[in-house]
Image (tube, rainbow, N blue to C red; front, side, top):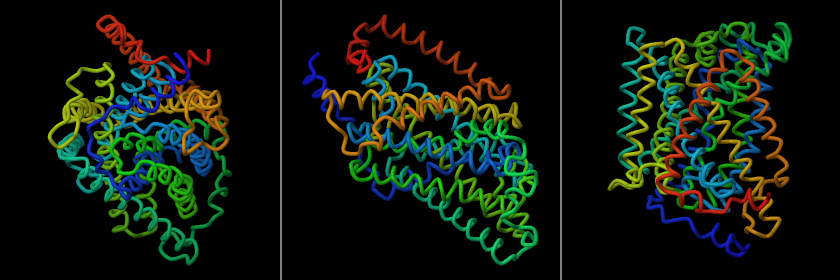
Length: 477
């Protein structure tokens, strides 16, 4: 295959996807902002504070820097070739058809189990007001409502996600302002004990040691899942060349404000020893400040965050199944769009699998959140690794003159992608070391075996499936 042919293929072979470009700039921007604010922060931070104390702030900052490297790598690929099935498509192009197949299905799995986690979290939040209502009932109601929204149109999805994200952003800014007010003016019942020194006054900044702090990175990385959702919107954005770079470049200040900033303020207002697993630190902080109504409002906000993420999960899984079907790696029926330009069958099947979360809330309500977050994190790490490796190979192809340069190059070329790859492998090692989270690797091993069997069946039925594109990895080798 000549270099000219590779270049032409890479740029022009994106098929007409048939989607409605119904996501405007304000919706894509807010989806990007809201994608970085989810249940991992609002609920999962409680358990991580108990494990690491104030040093959790540093873990969020460290992981946030790595996430920015990942997103800049993805941004360069998106402006090279914006497609709805971005992660799978780039893996398919630069590593080969099997990796596109594996990445697409694994990203689908990530969002299905993330949807389970969000349904679990939403049920927990509703129990704040209605403790007698079984969690599985609440989870089922939310599942059905969001399913209906996603079937109607991408515009409705985008509008609902815009307002979900607006609620989260406005509330977090309000929490930070109130917390700073308590620190500065000393009002409320928490004013007497609120102080910046709370970050180190109780057994230091690393109260349980650096090792314990590092062990929280699994939960921290889960909190950042969904930032890559911007890549899935590429095929339905009105102007991806303009909106996607803007959304990605605002990521550092979003992480600094909403994660590092919010946690710093909360841990200054309330000492870390007063937080407990299973309880949102934001709800707990407002209760201790002495604003019961405020705690209820925050609980509503974190409920919104959970529903927002579940809504995004339904959106992305349907699109990923359609991308796999168009590549011959999923049943052809998933290629069909409804009259409203939505992949209705893919969404429906994904929602049925998310319903397993309802069952988990019925069978093991206390452990459901932990189980699904660990599996989602492992699947997310695989997806991020594929983005990074694809970016490294793309940069090599650009330098060699085989592919055109992107209009949104990542700073430092592929150097920061290598840093992020090493970091993600380190986090995977931590997951393997921790007995509680290690189960997700067993689940992923079973998943990999199942996908391997599926790939063998696909090759037998369609031998040409491995010949669609000469992977960039072979050219490098």
